[in-house]
Structure formats: structure tokens, C-alpha cells
Image (cartoon, rainbow, N blue to C red):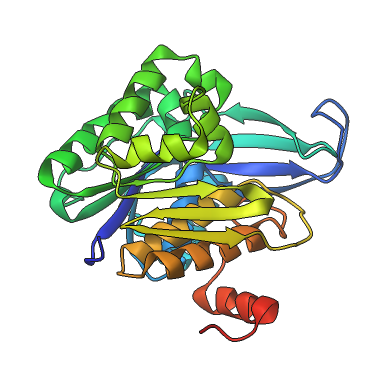
Length: 317
């Protein structure tokens, strides 16, 4: 799993506006910051590129200021943008988010019918056998994106490429039979699965965590990463298990932290890093991500991650 390859994602690219007030529920007048570059696949890939991986983003933006801001950010961080369609007829997708004191949040998305789901996968952009395709399950909820993602998943899997999956098993997604069916298909052919503890509970309600891991490793999955939020993470695979404790940080904005974690992990794995190294750095990157407002603003460089870990636990061995 360590050979050099191109990490690719297909899915929503958008900008996000974040409320500075908590508990307003998007119903009251409040100050907002934005436009912040966002979209789960874009956040993931931006972080993978920051870790030094070769990347290609496939999605769509409008020919407007929002679209230009996202493309500029991705290019500045080294993301390949040849697969981004700039749509003259449709606007860039937009999201608004507001938080509550208990950590929950309200989202309003304007994605369907925007440039976010009106794009195509360019022919010849990816070499399937040399592609590490990352799938964010949130993108599978959109029928147009779902078709493009699954066609590429099947092409990459058939050619012997690699696939990673963030199940992101939200209740609304799990109630959609079409989404659940393709999610099961991706899980059956992915080599790296990165569920949260709540994802495991949604996917395998009758199994313990240990039993769910054993079941998944009995399929094609080679590496399982369990994201535990503030409690840290666990990496299992290749006959190894690594448990990483959480880092105590001041949370400002948790959106995108899981994508930052995944981008760090897959970005390093694709470049030949050990499971321990990839897990340790991803765990740190995920913690750092929540300390800044804006879903992509918390992404970090290898030097920043190294400094964070050194400050927390002394020099790395």
C-alpha cells in the first residue's frame, strides 16, 4: 500500500459561512465569517496535498468569486485542479453553519442544482491502477455525484487501484436505500476504511466494536481507522493495532476535523508511511483542525504537526 500514487476525490466543492454566535440555530441575526473553502472531499484532499501527496480534485464551482476563492486555496496548497469544472451557468455551492453549546450544529446547504453537482469526470485524468480514490459518503447522498463516484470506484477497483472510505453514516443517509446500497458496495472493495465510533454503531448495530473490526478485516479491507473524536483514534491492520489518546485542545470549529484526519492518514499512507506514523500524525492533525474557525482553515503542514507533537510529548522517537 506504500507505492507512490495519485490520491483523487470526487464530490462537492463549496464555500461555508460560520456563525460567531452559538445557540442561534440559524434563526437569529448574527455575525458570520466566510466564505471559507469547504466540501468534505476538498478538505480531505487539501490536507493530503499538504502532506506531500500527489492529488487530483474532481468537482465543480461557478465562475464567480466563491469558486475562484476555493480553486485558489486548493492550488496554493498543491492540490491538482485539472478535474474541477468551472461552470459559467451555475453558481458555487454554499453552506451556512451554526453551533450549539453541546457541540451539535445546524447546517443549511445550497448544493443541488448548483455547480457543485454539475460537472463531469474528465476522461484520461486518472490512471485507475495508480489511483488511490477517496470516497466521502456524504457525497453519495447526491444522485448526480453518486453516479460519477460509483463509476470511478468500479473502474479503480477493477484495475487494482486503492480505495478509501469515510462512511459518515448520518441517519438521513442510512435511511436512503440507494445510498446504503452503494455504501455497502464501496465497503466491499475498499482497502482503507475510516469510520467514526458512531459510524460503526450505524453500520453494525448488533456487533461490538471488536466484532465489527473482525468482520471488516475478513473482507478486502486492509486497514481500519476508528475516529474517536476528542478521545483519539485506533488504527488496526497488517497484524498491528495502535491506539492514540486524544489531545486536549480548545475547540473553536469541529467541522472538517475528520476530513483533515483522513487526508493526513491517507496522504502519508500513499507515500509509504507506517500505520503508526500515519495514525499518530493524523490524530494530531485532527486535534489541531478544531482550533480554528472555518472547515479548511485548520488544515496543517508536516512541520506544524511535528511542532504540535513535540510540544505535547517531547521529541518524536
